[in-house]
Amino acid sequence: MKQPMRPAVARHVQQMAASSGARNNPERELHLQVANALRIMLPQAVVWFHVPNGEKRSKGTGALLKGMGVLPGVHDLLFMIPGLPLHSIELKPPGETPSDAQVTFAEHVVRCGGETGVAFSVDDVLRLLGPWLAKAGLQMRGRLS
Image (tube, rainbow, N blue to C red; front, top):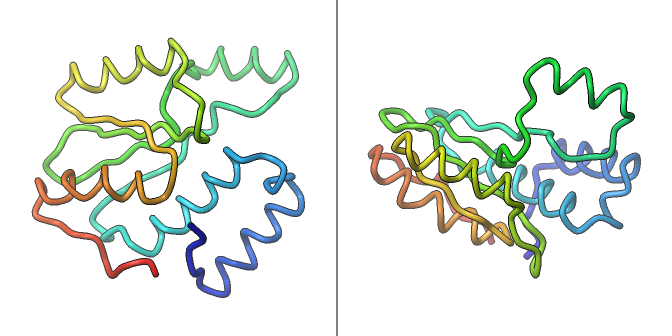
């Protein structure tokens, strides 16, 4: 489901896609669509961010990041919702499943009182977020058409 984008966001996404090959990468395209929807719809009280653990890197960069504390399996999106523990969403293209490290991360989130889920589309992300926001007395801003 393609989401309408603000012109400035659309230009930014278009530039990123052109330079990064997003159109040939279903997971990257999904990430861009979800990020656009979250920018439009999440209330400002919610802090969210993407964790760039994926992507191919040189062995040297990988070793440096590991030394700096990068944790394998951390989910793609983390959410800080007022009054709630950390929540997370792992994005996957249809047909793919979370890795063992991603399952372990989900178990840590739940053990700490948070909630987590796997999403295969923008709609999946919004369905997961709705109840989480409601627990904090928040709701989405508007609707995507």
